[in-house]
Image 1 (cartoon, one colour):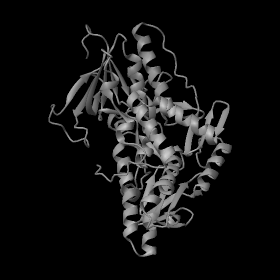
Image 2 (cartoon, one colour):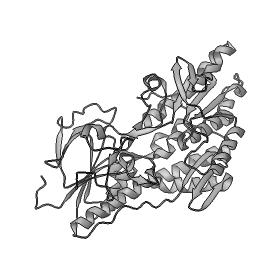
Image 3 (spheres, helix red, strand yellow):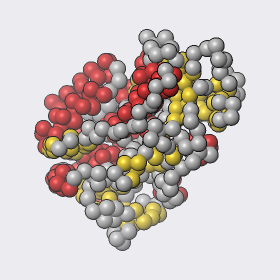
Length: 432
């Protein structure tokens, strides 16, 4: 238990969008805050696909968590991985990590018991392959920096291999890229990959006929961007087609055997690269802690985002099963940030004996880009597409990137790509 003579301690597990928003809202307040994360940086995940498509460097979208709270005297950061939580004693058991793959570090003991008065679970989500083990072994995800770097390497190596191959039939699988899942991640990556090929790699590999490159986007539902209104989704589909991207709707991935990919409608594709953007699931911490969950695997919470059965434990972001429009809140950054701020208000209200306010999500809209001059956006009652939607997408994403330096660098990289038709970050580097 925490010492009653000390200020209440809030422990936040996870420095993603939700955890960071909660910690920032508590900065300068009469509480002590400890943020625990297995990485020492906050990752701007909406732009991961740009790292994977050679437009941005990893450092452009990752910002040190300690630097975020450099001026916040009541917020501290711990690099570690949570192994378990003793809810009876209100203690978090954390293992030290070296942030290079989760191996134990030698700079600390094997574990540390951290007391808390309030606990906020914000560990996000992981890729969900829906039990398809064979797919999990060969597919490339887009959930963290190592995956993005591995995918960037894979694409560049495929073109190097294709350039060495003399047999046209054997060359084609190296030039075929299958992206499964046509949500924002899948659509944005497919569009970025198409532009990388058409505008950049075509100059790097004059010995290859880039008209032979295939980017195939597979979606099990009847439209791309299923969360968007149908008119915007259809506009996005047409723009994808105009960029040479093949769209397969109403088809799911049925199996993988070597470079042979089979879809549920019977179509077979030969491709050396499979990109998985078809689903995510709450992080494994949920199962490790034995928390109550809904059928989706997300943590059951009440109207104040408290974990059912635990008055001083909160779950936010991708972990939390927050009811929304007959289902659950989408796993997006905007809900996570609003939930983080709401939890901070609830904690502060409890400290001053004020009644808390139930969480209410304010939908500020959704957007996705297909490539240069092309994006779709739904902002309240207003819909935007094409160039206007693209400019709005640029402004919104630039605003939410953490760190002034990162904003400037990203803006410069975008401008270089826009005016020079070039993506200079094409190094094949070792990744985990």
